[in-house]
Every structure is written in C-alpha cells, then in structure tokens.
Length: 210
Image (cartoon, rainbow, N blue to C red):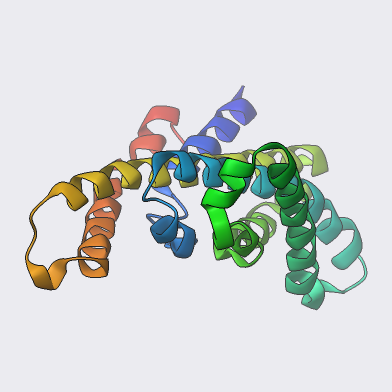
C-alpha cells in the first residue's frame, strides 16, 4: 500500500508541484512555439508523452545494466540522445503517414523533440532520482517509479501547454500596450502562469502523507 501511495505521489507531483515546464523551466521552446493553437498543443503533448515514457522504458535499464555496470556512465548523454532521436523519427514517420494535418501543424517543432531538454531531462533525472532505489526496493519498483515519473512529467507538459494555449488566446484578444505586443507579453504571461503553480507547493505531501 505504501509503495502504491509513493507511486501516486510521484505521478501527481510531476504534474503539479515539479512540473518540468512551469517549475523546472525545461522544454520552453515548444511551450512558446506550439501553444498558439489548442490542437497543435495537444498533438505535441501526446508526442512528448509517448517519447518520454518510451525513452525512459529503454534508457533506464540501459543505464543500470549496461552503462553503470561497465563504468560507461560518461556516455549517458550521447546514448540517451540517440535513443530519443530514433523514437522521434518513428513518431515523425507515423504522423506523416496517418495524420498529415497534425504533422504539418507541428512543423519544425516535431523533430526538435530530439533536442527537447524536457525529454532528455526526464531520462537523466530519472536515473539520478531512482537508480539508488534499485538496491533498496529492487529493480522492478525502481523501474516503475521512473516510468510513472516520465508519464507524470508528460502529462504535466500537456497541462502546461493546454493552459498556456488558453492564456495566449485571451492575451491576443486583449488590448495591451504597443511595447508589450508579441514576445514580451507572451513571456510575461508565461511567468504569471508559472507563478500560479507555486500554489501547489506542499499539496502532494499533505494528500499522500509523503
């Protein structure tokens, strides 16, 4: 039961308290570039969730059983980026063949998932945060923790994208001073959205008692 509560706390904390976009400020490029339209924001978010979970599924055991076991930890970044690049290429092929409108709307931001620091950050930080639990709880639970964390981070990315898409529509309809139009008002809106997430601090600990 305690382990289940821990997994639930990881999932919801990644969405609200430790949101990779609005709290850790990773993945800002697609956050600002693809959030103008709701359908593009949701499409990009689904692609990011898929890549995050699948990348973690592959990279975590590679880190534990291959890189760490053979003292090759210094190759982590290169190996992880190569794995992410392959997964993104796979998504590109699928979207181009079966969902051309979404593929065209995402444009250059789809291949940029390869270098999206949000995706790479999830895979790297999962190893840093949960590799020690392999000894404490066993590989299976540590592996589950990393996957739940990746899924939570992905849904947190989606939440940030969808929320900011709505904010940008309101901002574009507003009559703001000329000097703030365009990128300045977008950055101000992003900072206020980020500040709003500070209100979730401590909520996960109070709910789950962890």
